[in-house]
Length: 199
Image (cartoon, rainbow, N blue to C red):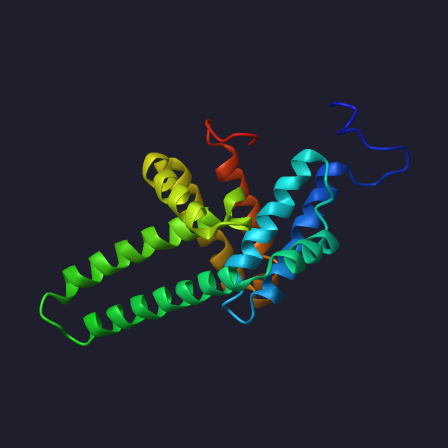
């Protein structure tokens, strides 16, 4: 164990447990900020940025999260949230039409679900990218490229979402903690890309 990871004398929990607690506190903040729905991309992107900062010895605390969020909430963030909400509503309407018995409904439902899943992965991966703090278009373009060329990372994003959804389904209060581990997973998927400058 390195000196940076060693516990101080009398310390009950090590740095990893502290980071875990910070991830959960950031998750609660992210869940609360996401309640208006259109703020979800900005909230998740900020959580990823705060957790990425832990690699550079910056505090991954709820306080730092709120400071970063106050500095960055802008029209582009709300537009990204509105576009995400519109996409979800469009997918829901398409699937409802397919259930209503349109001709070719089974194939239409499969195609719509595949497009929706890909769009969700791209959107989530965009939240994990550094560019999402300043330029959503660049973040989405980079995330779309990464989603195609890094299928394993896209699979990890899907698994992270499924795990978060299962936790929230099993015990509803966990829904307020789930965004923290989800943001950590999105950040880790982005950092693992071999050509990502600065990690």
